[in-house]
Length: 306
Ligand code: FVH
Image: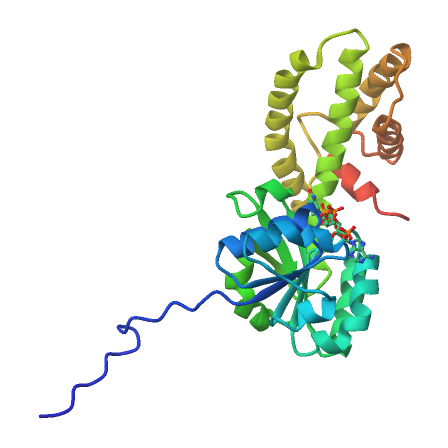
């Protein structure tokens, strides 16, 4: 009787890989949230922070505190760093090049695309696999639905190895093999957010100047911004990608004439005009260049420096 054939690989029960070890450098609000999520997902997690006392709460959750950054880095194949700025990342990690050699570094510190590219070039020169990331979440949102992180870096295959670990933090959005792209997407989304925040501040200042409680404006403003966003963002994208800016909705010439109603009112109410001054300048330039019949998408093209 022939020996029983082994089950085909597709039918054999595949052992669940145990969660990979990981190191987190930087235990501020965000780094602590990242480390806590990794611990919750069962990853053996080594932590280090410049101010050692911040390792305490994570050690209580099962993390292994390291006395030095070198000790932390050499404990895991993957190190995640999340500090205040990329200058602090450089000053911390440049002396750690030997410890990082042959390992993977994921930098989730907010920075610029050029900083990310410079760090990637430094890492490559020292045999370190580097990925940059942009976190689209506040610490409380880490490991909850809706949170995601952009990643970019030249070695997409190596990224696949660490995907299961990084998935414990937030959904993953791969931005591309140019290491600067995660920061670019991150800054683009935050640009929209800061623009909205500036508009919201201006709106509250306006109603506040007549003593209207902010809570009265809040629901109106929320619904208005959501409704406008749903129309304006996809409409602008369509106009830009097709290079068709003419509009039958709300043209620049009309908006240019309407804008002084805002700036005049701000002045009358004793308020600064904030972003509206640059918007007025942009609208003036658009109309003077003959784009009065176009929609707001035309302004995107005028933001390029000459
Ligand atoms: N918190 C948030 O909502 C945002 C969400 C999106 C992503 N950002 C970015 O994440 C980075 C860290 O932000 P954070 O909120 O964790 O910031 P802090 O709580 O202030 O913690 C800063 C940590 O950085 C350490 N640190 C600073 N400089 C150095 C240095 N030269 N060497 C070593 N470590 C340094 C600091 O250490 P310590 O002060 O506790 O000793 C903290 O661990 C940031 O890029 C956000 O833009 C967060």
